[in-house]
Amino acid sequence: MDLNLSRHFLIAMPNLVDPIFARTLAYVCDHNERGAMGIIVNRPLGMTLTTLFEQIDVELHRPDVAELQVCFGGPVQTDRGFVLHKPLGDWQSTLPVSDDIGLTTSKDILLAVGEGTGPEQIFVTLGYSGWEAGQLENELAQNAWISVEADPEVIFSLPATERYEAALKLLGIDMAMLSEDAGHA
Image (tube, rainbow, N blue to C red; front, side):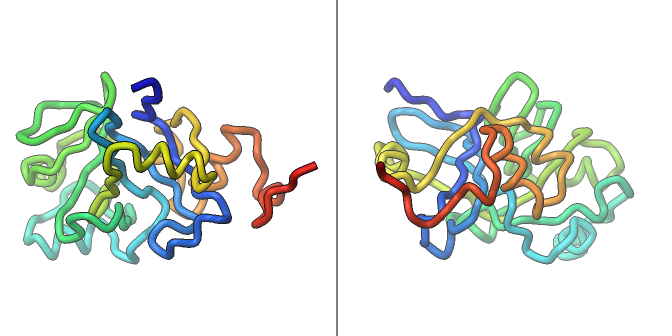
């Protein structure tokens, strides 16, 4: 497999009209010959970490993350939390995304955050996005997405509403330059 989009952003193009993925920014956590998995990082669910922690009955002793928005990560396993975090740390069920970023699904990370420790930077989604073997490559060929090497600070430092445009800026593209119709000279 030549194309490895792990640690890349997928930016939905205007012609991607699937309501789940329209105007989304996805972060690819793993991409190999069996397919790809990632999380949408700009679709807030209208729930803060404070609310999420109340729902799972864990006290939250980290004011720095209390108001962070929980996002819709994708249509797969939407009843399950996925925590993208930095640094990597040592948790029960973690997919290492890079040397310093992990995607963890085990509750031990949330318990640590609740106690006031845990990773310095976290981003929480419900659900994830998955692509079967060859599916993502096919969608890229159809111009449904454009990809760019991800800057994790876009996820960890910007509000969800600003992430899509920030990822476009990594490519030097302004929102106004995107139109529904591709021009062919």
